[in-house]
Length: 287
Length: 271
Image 1 (cartoon, each protein chain N blue to C red):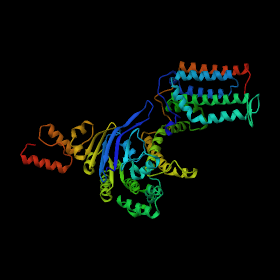
Image 2 (image 1 turned 135 degrees about the vertical axis):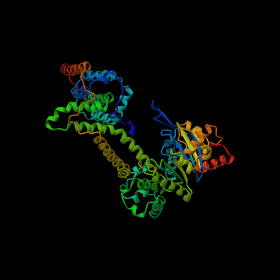
Image 3 (image 1 turned 180 degrees about the vertical axis):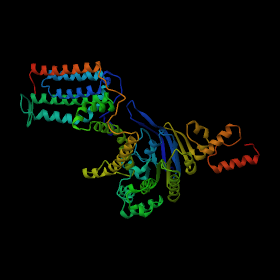
């Protein structure tokens, strides 16, 4: 059974005024346990609004969100419980740090779950280990950390709640390539080790291509494409028409195809590109 | 709830009120507020209300927007009205039930207080609805400029006000974002007693202050990079000029004040 299912979800801001904006329009999707769903879309495509429904922060104007088959907006308790079952880490999460020490800040979520002290301690240390924060940093003030460390501490704060689904909104925004790789690797390791479901919002197609098992493309509040990564990336032209940046290799193969070279256009990783190139060479085609 | 705050909101437009000089509008608003407290009978009060209605008409601000600015004061309004209604013990008794006593004077006082607060708030709202924050602070700076003679840092004060107004929406957005982030970590902002709720605000206030200071530093750097050195020798792109419109308004206001004074003299005070 799908761990998360969204049925015909719509959300409007400023309802009943002239300024009404339909941020999310009739979106449906299913995520199976242990998958990594990549959500791609432009700024203002409704990605952030959509994911805030997964843990009940926003209430949909229409439609429902099911966790393990149960509608989270059924009653108040269920909605509140969804906050801990779906860990949501916002964009630039380092701006939510507030405690005196990194340790206390990571413990904020577990403490709100009213867990026992030794359980909190176990979770904080485990989360810190996942994001690669050494013990020496745990007793420092979060404001003394470097930018990348702050980001990782904030992500650990969400991981420490040990949610069934971890939702990360642009976790690599504003980081240098090295910091970006660190974050993406730790997300991948976290998923492999804990077996939890991860939803990753990003506008980097390369990141999604590398990590995701399924992809959702949002365009003007609607789910333009949803399916396995292969299915979504095989529609390179459609992605380009939505103004999305497809991986560089896909772009090359799309333009080769446009020039009449008989190549596949559903290539999105370097490995696939190499294989396709070798296939062409074998056939003796002029590239 | 945070989005309901309309203080300092500006509605763009090209009406008579929008085109008035900010200085004239500020002075007139103050004059209006003082005059409304001089009204002691229904004739003068009626004249003031009619004038406020005329200004609203000239501003083309939708009545709905004006009513929205009154929402935050609704409680104060009700509170003062009820208090005045039953605490005035002079005048003719209209109604009595146990310790509750209602006199005609109490009734009038309640009406007067309510109308005064209503017109006071709506006229000030009209000022901010029709004046851009920049024009408003420029106006204040010009009006206060004589104080420079006694070494009051008028320019800095005006600049501070402009910046403060500019950052209200930014900080509201920031609060929204931080609140969502902490709620996602299970922060409980709605339940618990007073102390508990105050404590629950810390995870929001600390990041808010941190980011406010960060923004302040960034802004200060940006201003210095553009060679901002305070008001000394600074010229303006938009010069403020008084026109016929402003003269008409000033005359109308003098007439209004004279009218109120005369009406107060010829008709007996009811409160």
